[in-house]
Amino acid sequence: MKRDHLVVIDDDKSFRSYLTTLLEAIGYRVTCFASGEEAVEALEKGLAPSMIILDIIMEGLSGIEVLKKVRRIQEELPIIMLTGVDQTQTIVEAMRFGASDYLVKPFETEELEIAIRNVFEKADLVDEIKRLRALLHREDQETAVFHSPKMLEIVEIVRQVAETDVTVLVHGESGVGKEVVAKRVHQLSPRAEGPFVKVNCAALPNDLLESELFGYEKGAFTGATKSKPGKFELAQRGTIFLDEIGEMSMPTQAKLLQVLQDGEFARLGGQRNTRVDVRVLVATNKDLETMVGEQQFREDLYYRLNVISLHVPPLRERKEEIPILTDLFTKKFSRQFNKKVSRLPEVLVDAFLRHDWPGNVRELENMIKRYVVLRDEKIILNELADGSSLPMEQEFDMDLSGLVEDGKSVSLKAIDKKVARLAEGVLISRVLQHTKGNKRKAAEILQISYKALLYKIKDCQL
Image 1 (cartoon, rainbow, N blue to C red):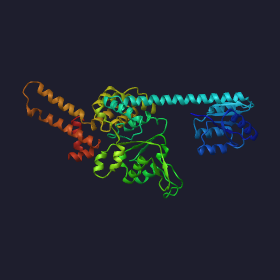
Image 2: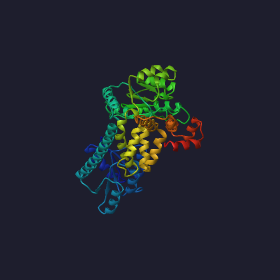
Image 3: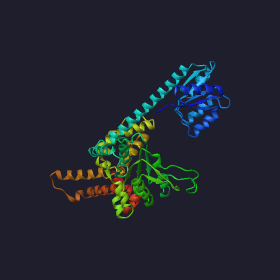
């Protein structure tokens, strides 16, 4: 990060002029403010300097008051305080409120240069630590999600297409990790240093989605009191990820097609075209080809988007990732909620491996979050029993095979009730999975009373 813009806040005009001359001679750009009020207002409006040099004793807002306000606006902005020789207690207070360093007036030029350099080196070190932590966290997630053979195949394709600017269509069920795949494409591409901008097309009404994507000019509609850039402009020289692309309306699809073809568009209410240099990645859990046949999605846009197609398999087809994902999410939520949970009980992990995960990785993540917060494995096991057919089907197969393998005569009447109970359990489990655990709705589908369903759930040990 380039650090060359310094802000000086001092109510002494001659001292501001002296500092400006000194700092510009060293090679910095300098912005001066005669009061803390002016400086705070500028920061609130978006001024983002590399460092502030702030006098403690000023008329109006004192240096300490300015320091507190700046910390609320830009928490990590380096600040060097200027003080007189008899202000030790004030400096202690300033350091407590987040000052990076201090200088005692009068000071030598070399003292100022060394203080600025040391503060910047410390800030660079903090940034590097954050970057490395983020990298480790990202690599942990990628190791977990890209662990199975099917996902490793996707990684190999991603490596091949990342260097190009072709559009990539990522499809699969909800919660499988389509966004993680899209981010991986961005991270391995030449645009990795640029922004990664995500837009969920299902989260906004169609009339708002267009303005969100392409921006608008002042007066374009009621409430548009000033111009606003869209997500495409914000993703300049980076990547835009359009999630749930199947929810996009036909008019917005037409404008998206123009961007893909020409690399330009007009803001809503605008007259001139804006050119953008953006890579487009899209994702969907819908069958876009079927939607094209039903005239719900533009055919020309579909073929523009479907240059490279990546299918992310559901979690039930890559269960070898579950133990790794389980450890990852347990650590994540333990830190987030300040809970001391090092690992999940084996009985839970075993149940996770048997579960079909209709909600995929997102369902697993939410399940682990609930366990970390509640620390009650029975609640989680009951949820799994209500929503999964697999354990009951396994019990059904195991019990029947055991009867046959005895080699003795088998009485159909003797096992009639047991088979009926097991069959009912399988059916109830499947219906509960279909209704996402809604027992009243399940009772309606099964054409029995709610009370009867509760009895059968208990009888079948679901």
